[in-house]
Image (cartoon, rainbow, N blue to C red; front, side, top):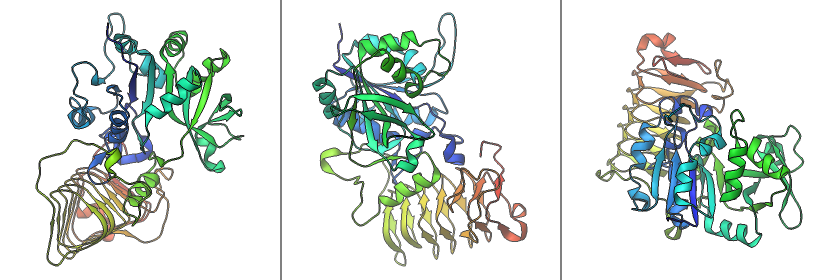
Length: 424
């Protein structure tokens, strides 16, 4: 019988709606990050660096590019005969068919996968955070405390604690109280959505709660186990951890990579971040180009000026163009003499000559102020912007636009153009 000490279940089916047009056609864990990576690379790299060689990736929303990126797991050394990486989408059962409806429900629907490996411990992860963590150290903590469940936690500002599940612990780090997104938090020790369960405890809880609608770990499984007086402990993590769930935090965490001494270092030898690498040429910097404080991806051609920006692979920045404080994803083309300020341009965008992005007042977006409100210009993948137009702040463009879409040649701050017919 196969028996693994610990396997990982990586939840990667989320829609990531707070990233707006960036996730209209792509799952959030597959969104590009840091020039050459995708968000899911961090959790997968943490697994292999921690000695966890069996990973089930649970997909659902727009899974095609995520599945293609993961493949058989070669970049992460997860192409194993026994174990390795397995993509686990919802599937039709003999008597019913249903989508995953909550984080715990997704795991419940894959009990057979876990039982096949018969592990002692199950590591539950999200696929949408930027961090480096040694799960082996967390497992040692779990064993030392004879815990049934260990929850990875991090200190957050008190004013942000209501966005998280928060815990209260005693002097031994045992959790005495757990509250999911409380209105008035009494603690700022927040759950990171990373759990180690002793397998029998997890199995019993999932079966007991199987009929719970939208069954979720934070809302249902952890409270259920707490009420059963299981031994639940908080493992405090003190490193860099970023939930890139909003355009603001996504932009900010990319910008932090290009600090002179970055808080989060992508290039440490002892804890590498692995990704699927395309076999493409190196980048080209033109004789008149200027590049200051930037990440430039492979096969990119820079003829203009780039300041404080993250540039993906295969990007072209034309002669006389200026890019500042921006994220430019793979395959995007920026025309000559175009100025791009504080923008996020998704993959394969085309911007014409003599455009100006990020002008005017900082007015919240009229349609989705809760998403497009960080002073950013956001352009969805495969969008086209004609030459000679201006885009204000907190604007969003999706699809192939023409000069007639821009009144007097400008998209004013807070306005939206959607020609793609997709979710904005």
